[in-house]
Amino acid sequence: MLRVLGRATSGNVQKVLFFLEETGTPYSREDYGRQFNNTGGDYLKLNPNGKVPTLVDGDTVIWESHTILRYLASKGGKTDLYPTDLVARSQVERWMDWLLASVNYQYVQVFKDSKKADNERAPTFAADAKELGAQLAILDQAIAGKNFVTGNSLSLADIAMGPVLHRCLDFPIELPALANLRAWRDRLKEKASFKKATVG
Image 1 (cartoon, rainbow, N blue to C red):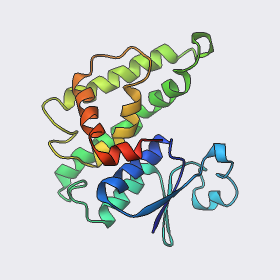
Image 2 (cartoon, rainbow, N blue to C red):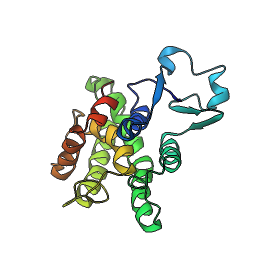
Image 3 (cartoon, one colour):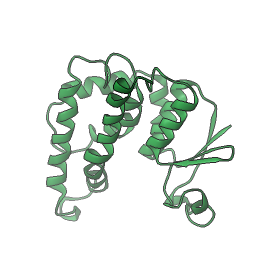
Image 4 (cartoon, rainbow, N blue to C red):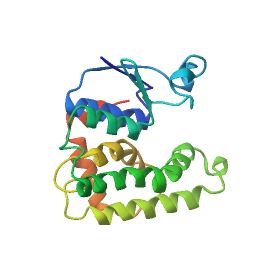
């Protein structure tokens, strides 16, 4: 059985759990993370970054959440989620990469500081929040008229972005209306797989 090493509250772990729940793939999840004091020592032999998630599939060990998603989809032949057609696949992967390249930094900064008092926040908080809103607006415009990110069916792009953008939309910051993105989030929340993955 697949082992997912990582705390249930991690957005990156939740991406992997969302996939596994959506595809009905058996797995076990084990609590790993800094708060458990178990991401040093032997864990570093599995994941030299000391971060989560890490996937253990027999003798195969994989880290980085999006790499894990690609591995699982390819191994399981989930072409509905991860197309073999190169053009269709590029449309999925570009949004997966966009999340990491264009959203993740501001997401992490706002996530860390949004619950703090104003005088305890980083000096860049307002700028980070504004940039996060601007990036989310790009996706909001791109998914107009679509049920999901790349069309009318769920893909790895939705699975990779769902848990993180779900949090972004609930940050106590001023955001654009983002009506399309909020409707997309509502469709994800209707899925039992998303609910179970993000319950942490």
